[in-house]
Image (cartoon, rainbow, N blue to C red; front, side, top):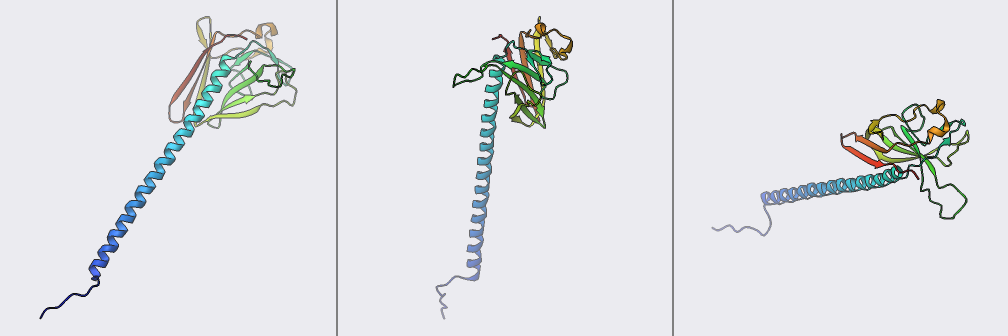
Length: 205
């Protein structure tokens, strides 16, 4: 006597189909997750590259536009065209630069005072609204780069690289404070131990 099988699926076949479907689902989810992580990683790298390129443009422009212009600080004391080392609330290196945009052609100076400092693992650029400052004058902060471990600045004078330039200008005649070094280099090290360096010859404007 022949026993004919019905048109339905056996329990084993159903379980096998469910297992295959689940395996396909897990594989698809894993592939999708990897794709999203790769996309996010590449997007983060692209953002970091854009930020670094912008920071490089700003730093190079600032260094190329260093100018021989002495200023007065918020206490009325003379400060050199470029100061490196010594005590300062705003920046390890501070200098006067030219090139301030004035599209309306107002009667304003085209000079600007800027400084650079590592603060909370960030490379911060300070920009003062005026050269000769009032007691309440404070600079604006601009974060250029993050995850920065340290910064080293040196200037070239008479074939010698120095880590200080008018660190304490209080006893220096204002006429001498205008003097600039021959070149300047800024080197930063990231938390991942990557080193970036900028070197510019100083041509006073």
